[in-house]
Amino acid sequence: MDGQADTTRLFLALWPDPALRHQLKEWRDAWGWAKGAAPVQTDKLHVTLHFLGALPSERLPELLDGFAVPFELFHLELTHAALWHNGIAVLEPDATPPALAALHGRLSDALLALGLQPEARRYRPHVTMARRAGGSTLPVDGKPVLWEVRGYALVESKNGVYAVLREYA
Image 1 (cartoon, helix red, strand yellow):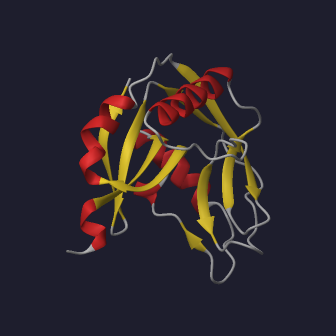
Image 2: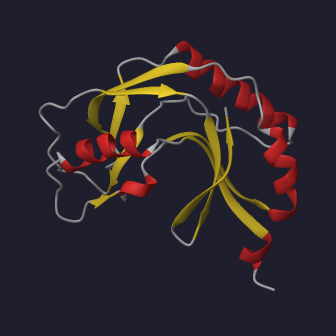
């Protein structure tokens, strides 16, 4: 049996609706991409809350229920294009909304309760626009993406395709 068959690659994310995804696409398309840059496909634009990696598929039912945490509606304003030191092009907020920080914390607690370890690095909410983007030109101006966040999702990544397994609202 293939080792991949018994694991599922997962992450928790803020998952945009089609109108928001279009706004994110407009930001992505406003960059001047350097040769070799790898812009993220439109259907994959999202804000990661926690990357979980490959987990045993048999744990899926437990995980689906375990990530249901209290949620309050909040607004996220994505306004700032940036090129991080490792060649990652992002769109990020000027500040993390307190409700987003609280959601991230509750999901960290859920991870621990499930025997999983959250990432140790500080959470920096963003939408990845491209990888290997060193030398790319940032958009000069862009209309802020005003996101009324009504929930989050558990997403599977399989062979380059993302599938929402459950939405939490």
